[in-house]
Image (cartoon, rainbow, N blue to C red; front, side, top):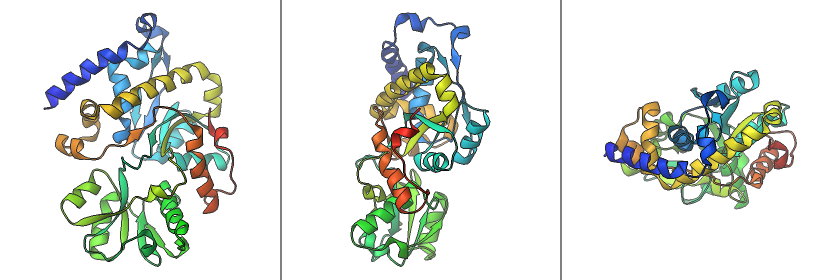
Length: 316
C-alpha cells in the first residue's frame, strides 16, 4: 500500500512543479536563499514535507532545511536567538509572546479550524452522565496548557451558554496521560488529540464529548508560521515566496492525505495504518489575519494577555 501511495506522491509532484516558471526551476543551489525552518513534528507538517520533497521551494529560489524539536518553547527560543529563521507554533504562544514585547511576525497560516475536521476534543467516560459543556461547571478538566487555544475555547463555550467557566478546575496534562486520568476518576473530562483520541473512542473506552473550538466566534487559525520582525523586514521578497509555496502545498496536502502521510512516517515512526486512520487537520490555503482576532480577544477576556490589539499588527 505504501508503495502505491509513494508513487501517487511522485505523480502529484510532477503536477505541482508546473506552477512555477521554468526559469525558476533551473535555479542553481548557489542562487537559492536559505531559510532554516524549525518545528515540532505533527500531522500539520505534511504541506512543508510535500513542498520539500517535490522541489517547490527550490523552484521558488529557496532552500528551506528542516530542524525538528520537541516543544514549541524550543521553537520560539531558537527563532528569537537567531538559530533558526522560520518557526511553526500555536497561535496562542505567538500572541502571548508578542503581547509581552517579543518581536514576532506571522508570515503564513498553518492549521486552520474547521468544524468538519476536528483533530482534538474533550473526552469523557463512555457512560459519563455529562451531556453538555455547561455540565463541566465545578468539574475537573484537563487541558494541554492553561491559556491555550482549547482552554480558551471551552471557557468561551460554557460562558456563551449562560454558564460560569471560572468554576471549572483546569489541570494541565499531556494527551498520553488523559485516558488514564479519566478512567481513574482523577479528572471528569480531558483534552485529547489524534491519533490517541479516536483510538480511545473506537475502542469504546471513552466518548467524544465536545468540540471546544466551537466556542470561538468564527473559524480561527490554530497554528502559524512566524519569524522575527527584523527577519521579516529584511527578507520580505523571500518570505513572500515562502508563503506562496506553503499555500500551494497546503492545497495539495489537504486533498491528498494518502499521498502525503508517507512523507511524515520517517519522522513520527507511526504505524502506517494508524497514521492513515487518524483524523487529519485542514491547513489554510489563504491567509486571513482576521482568523487570528477571535483568539486575541479571548486571551484578553480571560486575562492571558494584558491588553488587546489588531491582529494585522502581527503580520510580517
